[in-house]
Length: 424
Ligand code: LRH
Ligand code: MN
Image (cartoon, rainbow, N blue to C red; front, side):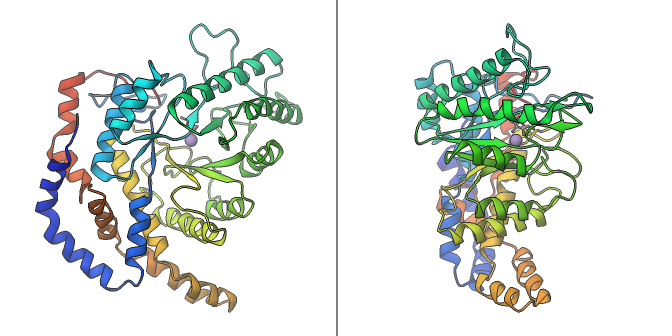
């Protein structure tokens, strides 16, 4: 299912007048509006290939219908999102859920949809049919060297797929850990994991990066062998310059100060990228900005402060990816909302008067500091984000087009009501 530029322009015609009124109102009060628009136009968020169907929990899964049946249809769905918001120009694959039937055909199809391949994801948290050794007691931490070698070989294979597709990074999330005290020797588990990661690191092409994703709990509920930012930083530092940490917003213990973690990882030149989502309790993988939009804004505030301090390119120098799972929403609507929330938080953080903020911080004027942040956060930047889309030949209101074009109905007609996409 495709939506043409002409169809998008037609919808924009209906919304243009109201959009221009709002945009003129907001931009009239801003000094750096053109600079902000340039940054928004350039900013692209990678869509996870494993989040295009209805997710589920152990208690149940409710099919949405019209789910992609293969990698080709997943690329079409992400191409559709990108045609609507022009901010979803990359796909992050998960192996073996998305093994390309023919890398060159998949590469061509992605290019036709104006998509590039972001980080590849390995999977040693499930046993595949016919797999020789089980990951029940872990993969790279495993007491049995043969199991560790199996996990290393899988990651090296994932890098090969990525090279064929033009990706240049690998995300390693290990579900390894323990469920009970006494089950694991923490030091040996760390050393086994580090040794295994070193072998994967050695297989990386020179221009590649490896992202070590940490998680506080689940599927292990006593310890995780890459359990927090400190442990991930330890691995990344011991591995070398091509290794970085990856921050999945849902992977923290309750009330963790993620914006401070981001600031310090950036300072250490060891922040590789993000898995954006939102949560109230655990790794809920909910729509970005749906539960704690202020936290997302504060994270982008630290990102801009830290990236500008090092002269980094906002769009290119970190990996911006979504990692979500959709239990009740239409996956494509959920992803449109998530990208919108990321663009809004970025735009609001770009409004912050950093010179003034630094002055009041240096004079411990705590009240003024909060006023500066909340003035930006309370600014309605939706028309700025819409204007960036318009200049990028996208839709002023992507969700409006998606619904009025009855895209889900079309997908159900085309693919059936019971199709199940690989992934979570
Ligand atoms: C683990 C995780 C990881 C992916 C998986 C789909 O919770 O965040 O990034 O491999 O979700
Ligand atoms: Mn993740």
